[in-house]
Length: 147
Image (cartoon, rainbow, N blue to C red):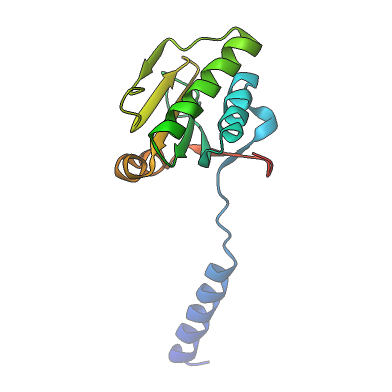
């Protein structure tokens, strides 16, 4: 084999090897998250929230463990989602947010429960702030189909 053939074979081997590399997304099973976060996530779906995502931040931050990020299609729906999450956590688990921000304008409502934070956006604000991109190193929680 001459030098040109050796180089060509090594190049082919590299191409074949790179085609078999599988990128594994970092995820957390839904069953492994806190019950309060599960309830908050279910509550968002009760009010027909759009594109709900749960990020597992436990390996990245010390200020909270999870973000629940979701959207409503208008001001009333954003507020209704916030109300449902707040009401269900209070009723079922005696859990109240330490802070609520943005409720009146309903562009981005933040419900801070300490161990997790619920972010409810209108579509424009969600695209602008793009928390999923900012926290792209976080594991995504695998949500069940019925949420």
